[in-house]
Amino acid sequence: MKKILATAAALVVGGFAAQASADNSFNFTIEGQIPVVCQGNNNSIAATETVDLTIATSQTLGSVTYVCNSAGGFTRTISSQNSGFMFRAGTSGTGPNQVAYQLSSGGGSGLGFAAEQLTAPKVTNVSGSTAFISGQTGSISVVVPQPTGNVYAGTYADVVTIAVTAN
Image (tube, rainbow, N blue to C red):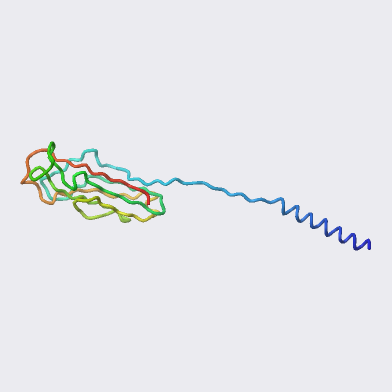
């Protein structure tokens, strides 16, 4: 009987030892967050770019580097205040007071597009890519498809906006 009690006691003590060891472990979670950064960085386009309105060749204005760490990518919107026309200073830009122009963009990963008049905003949805985490550069160029001849002399202008929004 003593042998049975000793064996039972050893099993009970051994069971407590196993439980004590299991109760001495714990879990925890490590967590952090990387904020979304999506932007277009102007590398070399001046606040006011002067272009030759008398030639029909493409004129490079500069470049923009697009940086975005969103896995969903981003949307780039390029818009013209005057629907792709430069207006003569002090006018509303009709007839001989306006010059049509086209804008184009270079660059890989979906950034590039051929010259087109911005009669409506140019919207480009770009997929998430590791290329954009470190930055992808694209040039911006303008062309005047019909060099001026039937317009009044003066300074012509339009405001172009490039906006980048994370998807």
